Amino acid sequence: MSKMHMREVQKEYGKDKGYVQGYSIIQGFGADEIDPKGGVDSRNKAHDLGLQFAQQVYGENNQAIVVTQCDGKSGLWHNHIISNAVGLDGKSQRGNMTKWTQLAKINDEIALENGLTPLDKDNWQKNKDRKR
Image (cartoon, rainbow, N blue to C red; front, side, top):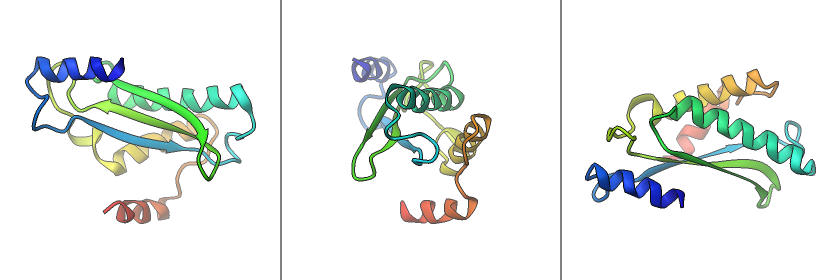
C-alpha cells in the first residue's frame, strides 16, 4: 500500500521514470541497547526510534515507512526506513536529507535523547568508505 501511495506522488509530478524513486536506510541497535529477546517492548522501542528518525529527517512533506524487525545472522533489532524521493510538494530530496554524515548526526542526537550510545565518530569514515 505504501509503495502505491509513493508511486502516485511520483506520477503526479512526472517523476515516476528516469528519477531516483526512493532512499533506504537501515538503523541498527546493539544487544546492549535493545534486548533481542525483549519481545514486544524491545520491538516498540526500536520502532519508536525509527519513527523519531523519520519524522526528524523527512517531516510532514515526505512519505516514509519504518519497518522494524529482529532477524538475520546478528539477531539484532533494526529498522528499514524507506522514503519517497519525491516530496508531497513535488520537490526531490536534496541536501541534508541525502547526506550520510548529516543523517548519522540526526541518528546520534536521537540516540542520546533516548539514553543510547551514538555511533563512534571513528567509525563514521569507515562506514562511509565501505559504501563506495
